[in-house]
Length: 312
Image (cartoon, rainbow, N blue to C red):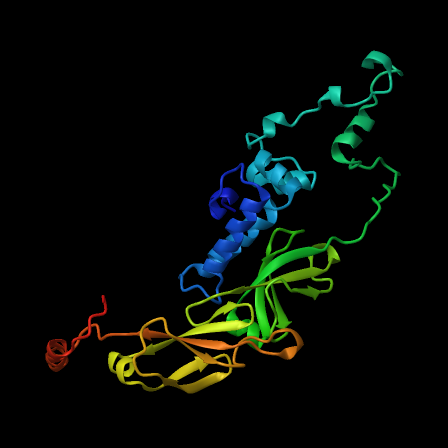
């Protein structure tokens, strides 16, 4: 496996704070999430980001990674890194850190108990003596794990089965699950998957709704673009509009400029008590990028007869 610089993956310095780390991860996770990103390598980048974040957000894992680089996991499991690897020259006993139980730490019966020293360094992991059964270490409650579930506004509103990817905190390997997302979830809500974290703990998915080109959410209100032609903007009319519930036709008021918003009450996002916010259709006047000769002629005639000046 090739070495990945997790700091470079997240675009942060090695002295980045926990808050800076989280901000960088959330920003890039939104950009490269396979559900919303159009980048060709979005899925692979999203996996890399998750792997890097899972290691660096944990203070102990980050300490080991900073010292041992790609061999941090081997060290955490009590294995020795290959010779010449980062930090390997520092892998030694420092007798000054231990209490040998004898004054001066001299030899003989009053000297150092090297078996005890070995246990202190490796947490009690030592080879069993012939005929000696090693007592397994006591098992505590499995650790829970938390990861971000990024959804588009429409996906969060619809809910339903979603394929998710994350890095297993125990194995460090990518993992894929299918989870049933409740319709109308909100940013910050947590979805619990019992026993799905590494080692048998619970996996918590923290929902984060990402604004996209089609829908933007603010509170319970949702905004979506409504593209109209210059003639529709001047004369008014009706146009199709995509909403969270499907397509509808809306009335365009005459004299509408870009930025004008048309309110559709009760068509927004579900709020507390089931009451829905409003949907705002934001007008965007779109002109032809390659007008025909006839269109150019007519626009030129309009410019001659119209006293309108948008800069007044």
